[in-house]
Length: 588
Image 1 (tube, rainbow, N blue to C red):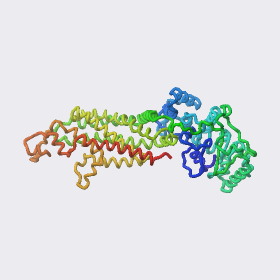
Image 2 (image 1 turned 120 degrees about the vertical axis):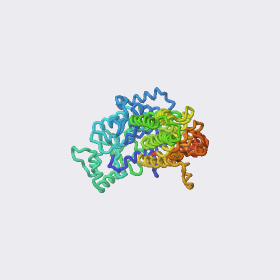
Image 3 (image 1 turned 30 degrees about the vertical axis):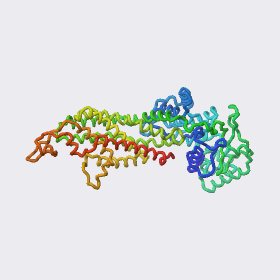
Image 4 (image 1 turned 90 degrees about the horizontal axis):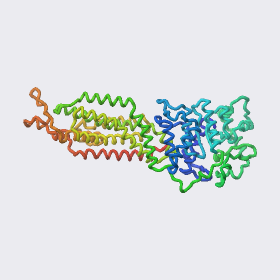
């Protein structure tokens, strides 16, 4: 406990391995804390970070399946999950979505208990909590602390928690108190003896006063008072005679029985348990030998296949609610009807060529930009959850990234495919074979758009910056997409190759006009020839061969040559996104 800025969260982050330190060392049972050992010390963050569209049952099930080892049977994982649900009184809200500020779901107390349940699922030997009562009313906060104390005693666990300004009833629930002020240890000892310590320091507490309020007020009163308290603690430390066994972090020998692994009272001469600020060794209870490093311990709790499978299922469930919301469905239906009515059964005449190009270009924009936008906005919203889980060593980054890439593909394609299926035949585009080739092309195009969105979302990791950057990119891609400008100045002609929409648009034009039925020449008007094609102007022909249309619009490559750059976009942007996520956007 301590005033704001005293170092409480920094200490917990350091103990949990979340915060870099340049001096000293952190050991558990005398051994440096490895990744496998860290999984046996859980850390419950102050913020309850979840995917809001998942139910509590789905969240806990995912946590159990991905954090408990593959060697444990699924039945045993479910049994442990059910036990935690009962221990933390979560059964009544199992099928309620987590929710957020925009989506009604679990209450504050239920979210906090759910947060704790996700960490306790691994049966850790030590539980670190950062201000678990923040934002909770008194009744909920008291019930939470009481529940934690009961769990610790019933299951023989160590609980280390920071707390800001508790009520007197909550304050006395704790066995020991570490008091921090500006990074210094002002007191460490039994909670029941802290008032005596302050009295000995020359600061007696008035009757009927909340001890926690009194302590914090004294530490914040002025610098002289704070320094006097710290100095008194230092003098008491110097007179203490600590047992030899406290000089090492190893407390419990490997052959102790379960009955012997109980809370241990530390013998002292004067009741003071303050430590030097630059060398703090906290021993609240014995830590079982099972946390010692083992060369056979796997680096990750589960294998790659398990991680990928569970992450894919979770991402699919979370994204499904975002992509298939009623507003997107209404938007798709309205645009399908609108485009079908505007361009219904276009006649095969020269005057409608521009209209056909407009329809085709719109299909390219819909298939490319919708996945791009959806993906750009999804990464920033997931950042806190992913950072929390990566910091705790839940899974490999590669498993998450692959699951993210693949699980959303079916979701981002379903509505556009239904959209194009209706529009394609209502407009009267080029036949069955071209229809299926168009679907395939647009699927590859959508995956390329998603790849760019992945990269932009990872680079920004902020939804406002991501939206701004993606808007600029989309405007550039659209202007260079080949519909608004078919010819550019020679010195600027190379920029069109940057736009992935340009390649897709040319692919679709190729499919529409290659080996298709000819188009009627435009009729002349007022002694001016209405056609732009040489075939119509220099001969008596009234029909335009489809190959002439391709030449007129500079479709010089074969279909596969326009398609290959889309695959390059997919590979390059997905690899670049992974590298940024792996080496730059590390969890903080």
